[in-house]
Length: 367
Image 1 (tube, helix red, strand yellow):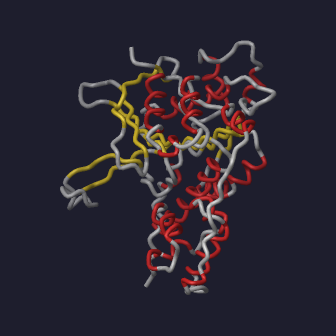
Image 2: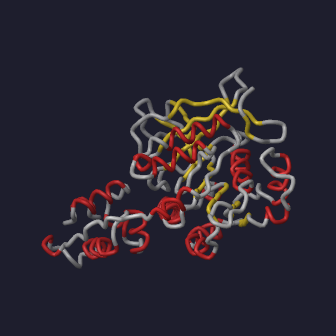
Image 3: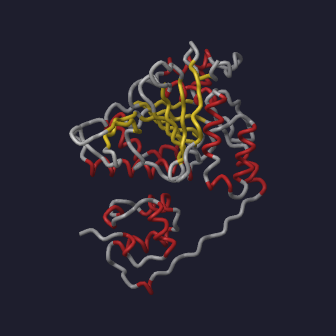
């Protein structure tokens, strides 16, 4: 029988990190490397090595556990100025951008140190998507997910190169469905008001790295090597995965394999946002969940109601993630709506907002 992590003789700091990351049993840690645990749990390498030894039964004396103290970090004025010059992005739709920013502002991370100042500065400049943010965009087919992602890409491409700062970075687009083609990005760039007619189109599009993954195996392989890929492409500051849920539709994928893949994705996205300082945008489809009147999982025979939820749930989420759902109104209501919440937050999300898509396929404010 598997041992629960809270039964291990661990320090309160390590236990708190495990509980926050939603680890329950020791077996869940078996396949994770020290590097993955350091990144995900925010622990030092010494702490992670002790955790792994205790979990493996190699060290069971509480007196032997020595927790390394947290290091106090300091930033120079130059480093803070460089942080403020990092790219911020937007969707091109004011109401959507305001919704994202208000939701992200609920994060406790945004209220500590100089991050608050940076966040306010970025929003004043029109950027709602900031370095280190993860944004999940879910919705039914035709809900506007691709239009929103295209708007973010155009925002990134419209940033002029700066010789002193990292402000004109590159974009990685991981396409699982075949919906993102160079022609589509080019068309979005040519029809968007933020593009500049003086720019060389070939040079602009050269900043987009388009990776097409057509099988589940290819997706797992690429996601597992994402940190190495980003290390070899240091100018990439925006990562887009469209859509993450596509290759999880295979009926032969058992729950254990599914959970392991989601853990890999969780760790790699955490590295992309924390170590590589990228903004990560993920799109997902919705799935129908059957529930009883007590909100317990059900089937077609026992279910009392059905609701639409993001297909992958929250198993792949790490830290604070803005979760946005795009949807249409009820019967007789053709308006488009967006609602956003912050993952791992007990508070309710911001009220939904109305948005629209213009004839060119670009997100815009409602008339």
